[in-house]
Length: 224
Image 1 (cartoon, rainbow, N blue to C red):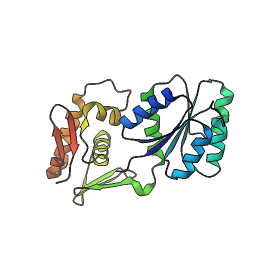
Image 2: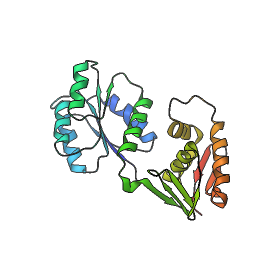
Image 3: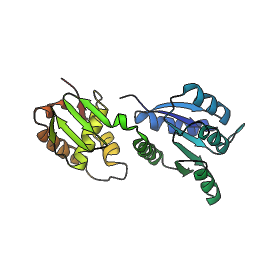
Image 4: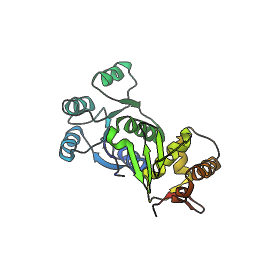
């Protein structure tokens, strides 16, 4: 699966690095801009930005103006970051078409969770079908077939299989699986993953063997 590309715009280099590191760790591609003018140049030059994380207070051109310029031509999701907590600013952001509004200081983990949630909502219907190793998963219809035969999965089993298939060939730690499938607010035991994987494998028959165990780490979905 191609990585989603995110444009991070902030005049503070430390803030950009913090956000970038967490996004890259979660398998996103990141492009950075230090001011509003550079952000617009990159956005229109790249023409493949999936989401923009945009600071409000910046030199040359502030976040509001950048948002206006982007919204004149694109519906790419925008998350605004601001040190202000003024309700008027927040309302202005939504009037301009901002998808999410996060006040500083914020938790980078929460920011990544918001990014994931927004991108899930904005994935085109054509990308809702994932196929690998004779397994066909339809995220919109919430259905799975193995060699054409329907398989009845629970909600979490479905989410787990989708995550494995979308990260085909990548070794995934239990912590990363928990963070991505159970989200950051889950405080349970990582052994719940092993239980779900066991049930998922049994329901998939021979295709359950495509979910490989990486001893001492986690799992990897790999086609034969």
